[in-house]
Length: 111
Length: 111
Image (tube, rainbow over all chains, first blue to last red; front, side, top):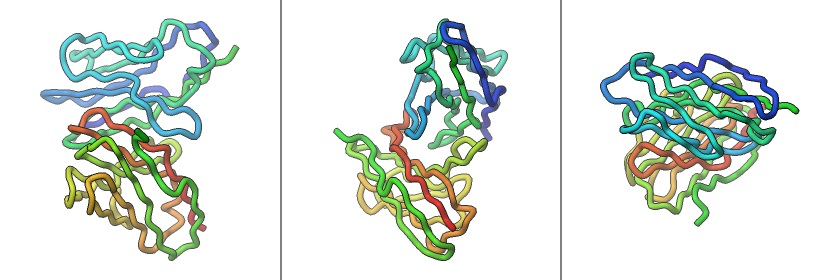
């Protein structure tokens, strides 16, 4: 069965610093990977997705992720974060007809 | 275009009471899902549907039932609520099982 591990439960950073949120997945023949963001008291919003093609995927709000098949990783990065990026971030992999989510990483951006 | 809507937004139940959560989508999506979100657990799939009249169990189906009588609606029922069902419930829909669109959530407390 597919699974996802988010390696950090909390990531505190200062405004304008770079950030990387780490995600590893269990290996499979074909992998569809996603990053979602959840702002406080809201539902989840898709940041970006990897279905096939280029291993560097660009998403909304300046985020990008790199699919690394040999490392079975799909880490999320942003070169300069803003206070408004404070949220919980979920990595997910498609397993059958549904998505399997990691336990989430809380990104806290302070000034 | 409202996307995915959920009713109610908040609810407090006593142990043993029943209730139904309603999810509606106006995107003509075939796939619909119910998740629960608990602190430190990420999102866990309760039940899902791949089309009108079909339902299937997810990771944590015990204590819940679902129905998909109309393509645009997906109902989640709790027949006899327990304190362990205190959670935030999210509905999502998808065209083909990849990108999922989430509702704003229902916060349920069972006393």
